[in-house]
Length: 255
Image (cartoon, rainbow, N blue to C red):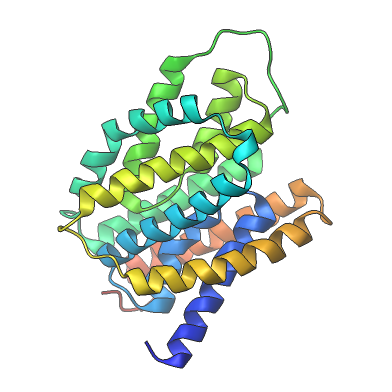
């Protein structure tokens, strides 16, 4: 890795971390486009590398928010994710780069719409936990993590709030733990069958730590809903770019 490449990867990581720190979630879904279009990795290698980066960011988040993590229920939800995680990881190896990018673009649109329209209460009390809902969400989250290399926190946070009655603080922190479990399982499922650029992952992760601090600092001084709308528009634009490039409407070569 040349000094120029090292500096660029640090910068890309800072952008991802900044998005995560600024919005409190959703930034990991831009990791794959960064790796494919800016770093120049193949789609399949980018998915594996994205898993390593997302896992590292989640681990850092779990450590910093450990007081709010419900480790018991988080482990259960994470293990439920294995139902979808392993087949998602195995299936990705047999899907073309173009199809993966198109599916990823669709996922980004769903994520952006969720950021636009979902309004979560701070806490829901006085109802029985809906573990059936959690099981379904856990399996879907596991599949998405293994198949596309994304965290999927925007799915698990609402599920923890509405199905288990968690506060937002507990839901966000526990979601990071679930994502960490899912990424570990997905990486293990891919071991020997899909490449991971650990050097790029480490450099981008380091940049992400710096960007996360800066993003969190700015987030405390800006209205949260305004930040969500701004980031949702950004995600939608990146999703459109990814989809159009996969369809060759935007003439960009992808490995």
